[in-house]
Length: 224
Image (cartoon, rainbow, N blue to C red; front, side, top):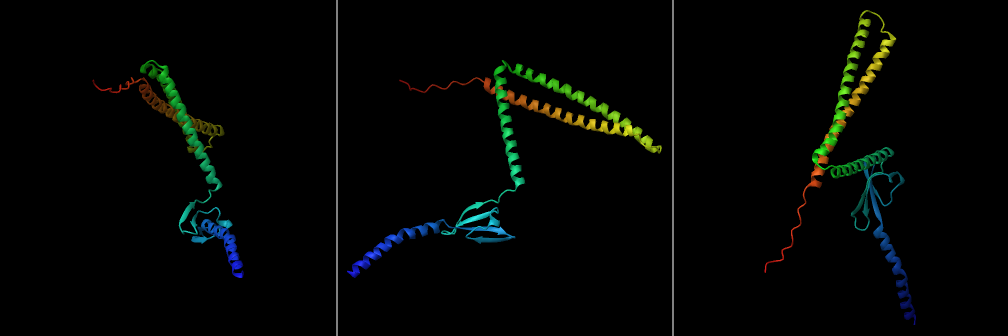
């Protein structure tokens, strides 16, 4: 009888301990080791200290000893802001490209001939060409005026006289206006080059939409 009780007790203990053993094996299988750099040297441990949470690290399975993942270091606030700004710029570029494609398709469907499409662009080109010429004339006039003012200031200094306050103020104002006009001219020239690119893209889209479509070949039914 005692042997029977002992056998039953052993069996019951095995049944009760089996889930615990399996749980321990599962925990061990999930357990990780962490390796990171600290003060220029590699440090590994089974727990990640608070000062290493934001560091780049490699996670290693304690069971297999194989690396399971690599975690990059946390970005600084400046890096996060730069990444967000870059994402916003990329989204804006995508929206701009999509809008341009929609305009091109609308134009391609609105004009009966390629000449009509070119004529629509030529009006914008002529307007910008006139704007660029006006800006160039304005810059030329400002440059000559500034040269005259600077010559007057130079003559006063050579004569040992102080440069009049109103002359100095006028020189600064003229120089500032010259820089502003030069910036506007650069913008107008950029707009002009973009129109050329838009026309080339619109023509390509127009030709693709207006190209005759080849009818699909009828399936060969075979000869009698």
